[in-house]
Image 1 (cartoon, helix red, strand yellow):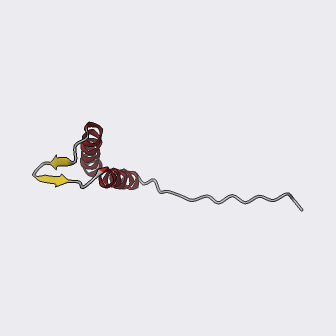
Image 2 (cartoon, rainbow, N blue to C red):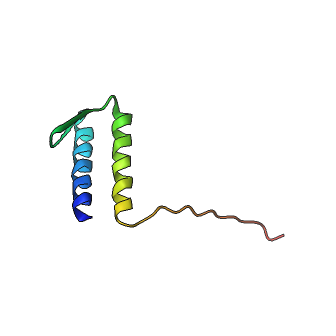
Image 3 (cartoon, rainbow, N blue to C red):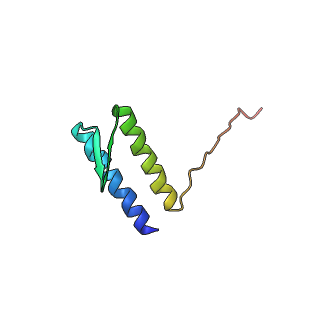
Length: 71
């Protein structure tokens, strides 16, 4: 599993670097991807972050809080 996380992390680092430098084209090994705009690049970064978090066994939870005045 750590090999998968390492690969995903390398891709994430590449995407972040491309976004920081204003590039829209990213190459991973033999695959080259060109994103249409910054929003697409940001969505790809968010997707990789979610996938890395899921590999670690951590799951996102939603907590709902309710309150009242006590009456």
